[in-house]
Length: 303
Ligand code: ADP
Image (tube, rainbow, N blue to C red; front, side):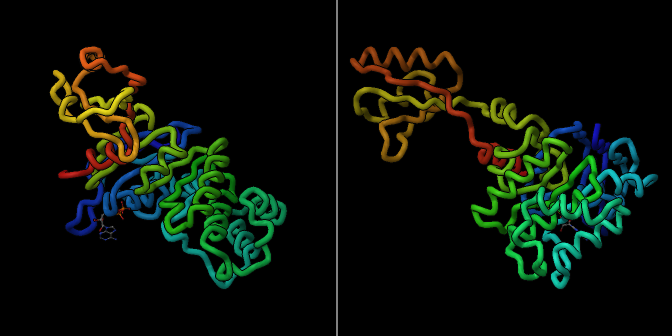
């Protein structure tokens, strides 16, 4: 395992930020660490990267314990903290050489050039960091995080504050880097995990509330089934709710498509029967996958 977190609790003064958290991350995976603000995401990431110690429990990265062997852990981990604290008065190349120096990177000029190419900083490489747009600053942040070629990357809200174009570019870059490294990224944006992550861990009030592949999270979470159904004729929604086993029916805005919530698969037969009795044809009937956004809301409310 690349990251193993066992029964970790973190207490700041009176505040319990993490409460008996356990999970592991397999090599080569991109894992989304999802949760509302204040859930404990940054705290967990700071512990994994040896910035702060846990109150109890154990964390290891590539087999090295964060308390017993922090120097080895730091060699294995690249970290892009939240708000990407860069030295705005330094030039891009100067800054990357400086970070490379801290990690004793060999052939530093070559490596900086390689990083600039990899993250697409070419045309901005001679500027001061303070003169870069937020998207390019994130590229510098990613370059500094991978300059020592770590096996594991920890990215704390890497796309917050980016415009839609920058967002797409940085997500693409994370996916590319993720082909060679294990990545754990935190976010409160549901679409982000759908777009990039193999696995999703959801945290709420310091506790893990979900930990599974992103696709299985969507498949298993719904207690009821939502069908999208298209009939050949217009009809009244009240008639649909009278079908045995139908819990709710509403029409998609501006479309002749009905969203019908049912408790079990067999109710589909009743919908076909209803159509026959009313001399209608069912043009299509499909199971709607629940959006990750709804799953997130369900898992993180009232806890
Ligand atoms: P997230 O990254 O999910 O927004 P954080 O890990 O930053 O959450 O915070 C988790 C909880 O711990 C929050 O209630 C926050 O106020 C609290 N917290 C974070 N850092 C500190 C600190 N240095 N001192 C006291 N409380 C903190």
